[in-house]
Image 1: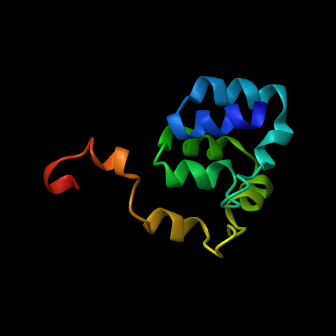
Image 2 (image 1 turned 180 degrees about the vertical axis):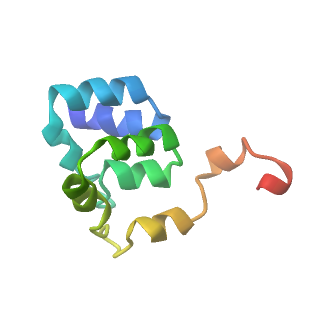
Length: 99
């Protein structure tokens, strides 16, 4: 149950809930979404929630590598995920040349 709430927090950019949950249970950093095989930071890139992704800088180097290096179920690494088009609900908030 906590992992579903944590995945929702990543999608919605709920930084406070994310931090509080990870402090209580650091092992949750390693969970993956079942459908895509993406971890929390890969999902933060997918959903463009930079306030969640930037928390990666507070982790030690070994943990960062462990979270950022592995591919998802489709073989995409974090750079491939970043290069994909943003979700449509995110795109609808951006107008003009920024898009």
